[in-house]
Length: 505
Image (cartoon, rainbow, N blue to C red; front, side, top):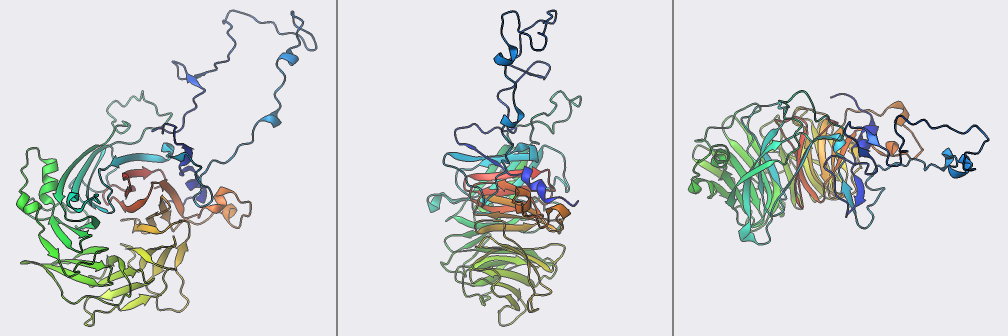
């Protein structure tokens, strides 16, 4: 990833506009200019002289034929009367939306941006791997998601497998629509096509995760399962096989066996009636492992075998408050990390007989530690997000060293709701917060010489050099990178999903 200046993020922020204004899908327009047929802008106040007319100009200090002084009729415009340019960059925490204003996206900084509306809010989702290939760059794109609803009544909830296709590149003002490349469909700016299949779900879905598949792998055959786990507000963790639902989205006329799809393959009942949010899968050579954490500070391990799934009766118990998030180590199959409302981050080894943590980062954040993410290629780096809005990167090699401080960022002005390292770039990560922001970061970026130590109070000096992009989405809950479409971000919020790719990555 190339080095970038901190000022790049300033072109990425959305701008406040009156709520009554129509949000343009192609960036801001200059309404006082009218393009002619040749694409040039006409001046509505242009003098109406034909090309054949010759207009004699009065000599200096002389009056015209009507005895009128031109300077009196059209006084000179003084340059100092022109309004000084002002910065319209919206900086969260410094600027506030006025009553009746909302944010408008600046599509000039997006390669692709789409919004998907849903019937009910979804707190969590995961991206399903597909057979369309890795490192995909062409448009239109296709992606598969699994999510769960938060309906008004428990009986109306469902797990949804969603196929989004026709994800075209976003058009921008100034794009040449008369391109000679008639076969290039990348520039079409159409609404995506959304198809879905559903599974009835008892209770709202607090969190949902799909089993991991090896990188560059194909989906398992239809006869083999593709497991998804859902954390229900009823205190149950259900495991579903969604492979037939994916097939039914791709094969016309495919008949889904409801006995296979609408009944859980397995249910974790060990949490009793205590609900939770923390959950993560791991894959070993011989089995799948699922860890789940609840609001009573307990963590349970469920393991697959040829005969099915089984949950160990003894929980992992070292936290003193609710377990907020869990992450398996990407390098060691017996190690996982947890974070909690008790302000700690803990490291565990499932081989420990006492089911207690092997290491602990006490007071990792000022209050609740909401989310964590383990770097896939540099497995000693763990990212955490706290209730105070802070983001911290921990070097697990030094957590037992007194005075060892993490790399920290304090950009967000609300609790962090989601964090995730980039799947292939070990210096980039995404975060979302209750301040309606999704932020994209690159920790390898260093400030330019003229951006260090400034005291002028300009927007550039208020933005961390490592912050590449800020995307506005109201009440964002969770964010994920697509593992097969580089740089593409998916997020879920109060009113639906956003899918975007920026020019910054």
